[in-house]
Image (cartoon, rainbow over all chains, first blue to last red):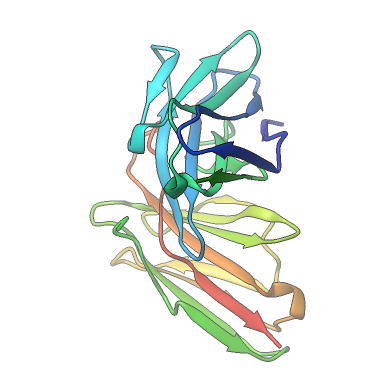
Length: 115
Length: 113
């Protein structure tokens, strides 16, 4: 069954430093991959997606993600972290089964950016 | 603002009771998804409706049911509530097509006492 894994429960980074939030996936076919962010007491906000094409995907708020098929990874990156980036980040993969767009989410990674 | 509206935002009730959560999708979106977010289970898919019909089903308990109405709003009914049902319940909607991302509402926080 398809799945995504986020190996880090929490990532700490200093403001101004680059950040990476890791995600690996497991699918049998071509993956449709997504990143979402959740601020406290809010819903999930879409950041970016990979469907096909360029392996480097650019999204909202300066985030980007790199799709790596050989490593089955889809890491989220940002060149310079902001304190306001502190939030819970979810990686997700589209369910391959049936005519549905439902997403299967990872367990989430809490990003803490220190000033 | 995602355009997905959920009510109520907060709900406190007692064990054994029944509640209804409501969701209005973004204008033009035919699909509605329900997810449960809890500390121990993470984000769990419950059920999806597409244009009034059930399209996919996840680990939704038999005590829970949902429907999508002709105006495309959806309701999630939770009955015989247990303490463990306390969670954030999210509704999301999407456009048609396999690559469409989901747009989430702000959620309904259910507390069962």
